[in-house]
Amino acid sequence: MKILITGGAGFIGSAVVRLAISRGHSVINVDVLTYAACLGNLEPVAHNNNYIFEKVDICDREALNTIFAKHSPDVVMHLAAESHVDNSISDPKVFVETNIFGTFNLLECSRNFLKEHNIPKEHFKFHHISTDEVFGDLGHLDSTESKKPKYFTEDSNYQPSSPYSASKASSDHLVRSWSRTFGLQYILTNCSNNYGPYHHPEKLIPKTILNAINAKKIPIYGKGNQIRDWLYVDDHADALISLIESNIVNESFNIGGNNEIKNIDLVYSICSLVEKCYPAESNKLMQESNMKNYSDLISFIDDRPGHDLRYAIDPSKIKQQIGWSPANNIETGLRKTVKWYISNQDWLNFYT
Image (cartoon, rainbow, N blue to C red):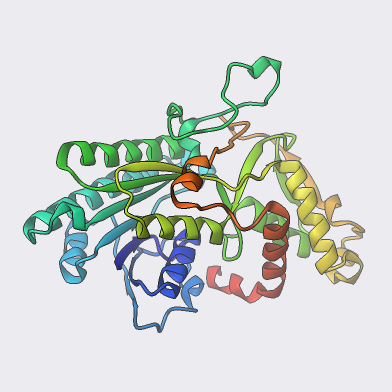
């Protein structure tokens, strides 16, 4: 297949690009290269004959039309998005522009491309990659939260809490409406928190690893009691590619890792893994800071506004329909991730 992937230089997008090419697909990577993008993530495929990079903003409708006409994709996999919740609180406008209007542009370009080139609708798919944050907050599983569901399912109500999740919820609704009104075939996926190699250093897991090895404070919101379901990025990419390779259309799937853990417990686990890979007593920076344990670097800070307490996904539908389940649990995935960041610190040069 010829796949147009938006945001292919991002964390999840680059994992999808690498996997798609390894499976023999042709990829057109459309990315404007914002601060969160990194072409270094694509060095393994940069010179592959099945890979093309187009530096284009999804908010630029005219440029997108040119890309569609030039490459005639069979599938659009839409991953480009502003995704950092803190940034959406300080500057929500760019989230509305990119996540809502950018998705609108892609939907319209897809629809017009099929119409202008007389391509049957059944020969094209629009795969929209979204987040479990559109469903809101599950809360803790205790007596005070007994009325809340245990897990998000494909039928969960949308109750976004932040400008980021609200913008993603809006884009989800646009995709479904373009199918209902215009007949555009789609797949929609909502995933839990991703982690793994090549993750932007502003995110919790890489920040914890990098701050630890550099003897810097490891910030934790509130008391660290927020619970997340963690999904190893390569497992997510496998699920996404497997869905477009199937005959399934016009359905939504939740993709999760079955790895719920409190943020504070996650951070302690990372500190323990860093200790095994790079003992604090061998770390000159830790010695200069008079720190004996990486966990001593943990620092609790004020919680952010509207912080959801718990996300958790029921991924049974995708397992039943295409047989997918994650290959990594939190222990194996974290071990791989910690080792990668310790061994690939030069990768950070792409962000400096």
